[in-house]
Amino acid sequence: MLAEQAQIEIVAYVKQVQNLGATVDASQVTRKDVDANIVRCPDAAVADQMIALIDQARTDGDSLGGVIEAVARHVPAGLGGRCSTSCTPTSRQGPAVHPGLQRLRGGQRLRRHAPARLRAQRYLLR
Image 1 (cartoon, rainbow, N blue to C red):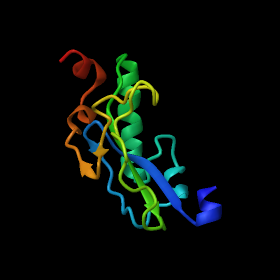
Image 2 (cartoon, rainbow, N blue to C red):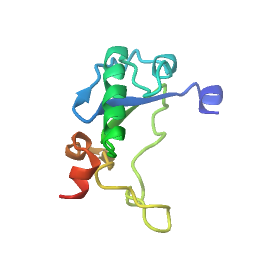
Image 3 (cartoon, helix red, strand yellow):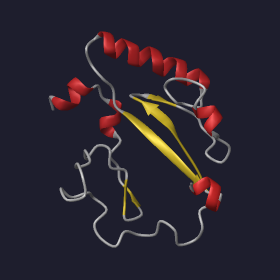
Image 4 (cartoon, rainbow, N blue to C red):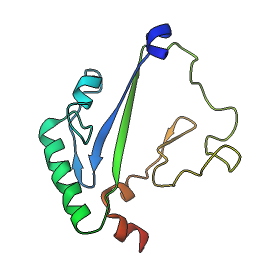
């Protein structure tokens, strides 16, 4: 709907799984690039490594953290401006967001990528 009526394009992709980071040109990435593999990482060489790492974690009965990046293009000025209330969901707004997943708040970047580099068992046992 946004694409059809306002020509807004949103592309989200996996930027990192544990310590494997992809090299992505945010100004050029397309949905076709993202949809090219099951892990939804537009960097094909790193995507193959991510898949192998995820498969190994699954074999070990574990899971991995990661970072998802989103790019919005052609967004009109003023759309999506600062939240009028707290940007952190409350129980009335839906399920709480895990602190390790929260990346942006009130226009500030938060430094919460440390959990993305850990296996779930190590993070949960801290």
